[in-house]
Image (cartoon, rainbow, N blue to C red; front, top):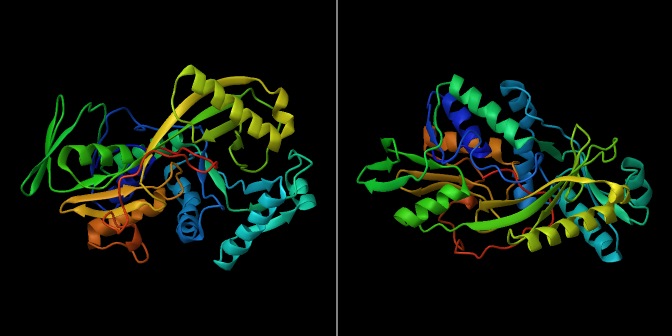
Length: 363
């Protein structure tokens, strides 16, 4: 398996428990390439209903997964998306109706209800969409816990592999690294970065998309933000994490502008953040599927992919069990055929911004 980030370690854990202990290879150290904030999104109630139903099913597995592998910072905090204009309120009410009609636990809150649940919100909001099922997880801790549990179940991890040259040798794939050489019958690609690398080396014909953003972390503050808000989360230590997805570039001018935009947007939602000091800030980059659906299934004979469509970690348990089903039974679980890597309409896509939701969860 290529990729030892959160998705890859989740897959390794499920496979190892089914006595299909994998060899997991990654360029870097434990955790693979984990971009973004120290808290990652687990189910976003504003996700389209089409993928939101699968996302909710996957998110419901996090509590059990945490019981199995140990604490990984998972918390079902609930989520709100406040509306400050008539247009935003109209769109929010429409979203709540659409999600509710699909059976998703989303509803519209009046201004009074929203402020009662989240007193720190700006007093000029008109209302908010709300779901009690939105949550967060610590991606680094989640990855370490899953990797340790996978190793105990028999998985092997090969870290710091550096550049990996992959070639197709008839019924085998050879992987040549600086100090290792491996031949395998099956490859599971567990990140967009690795999918892009294989496409360049052996021409898979499955494109990816790069998204970027910027993270700001404030000084520890008294309890302020109860729910996961758009681009705003408060950690258990009191630090508030601000995340601005859609930033392009990493030079100082871009970083300064991104920090200003993220801080301004956060203050409009939570005015009490105006006087908070910034103590950390960094850019992030993630490689995801090229459209609004994950990539899951057989790419070509012997190569399988499990790559999410956003940097969020919501789908990690579902993708892990789906890959195990493909490996054991040779079939994609019911309802997930639409995520086939060879689906109609998958084509090269330029890097583009995500909607301003919560971002990174790992590549």
